[in-house]
Length: 79
Image (cartoon, rainbow, N blue to C red; front, top):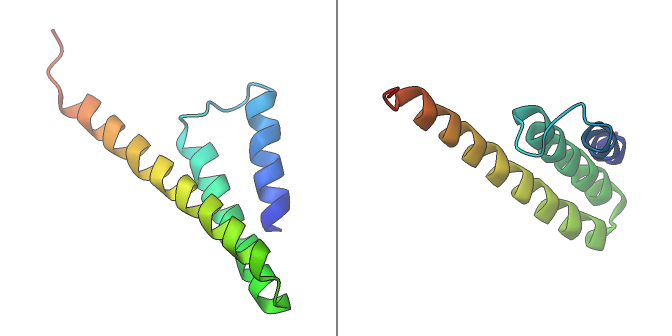
């Protein structure tokens, strides 16, 4: 499920359905990385766990930065 989610996120990006800075794209990558990492841990595939943990962390970082940028835009005065 996790790998399918990250592939789906990339496909949506490639097809122009989401932007690389969208919350949807970041969330799909974060959740996909967590799910794929969890599956890897259940099977003892530690390289898969490591790479998907990094993938999920990058997705989470992107998600946080996107949310912060949106909050900052909402708080800034319109000139």
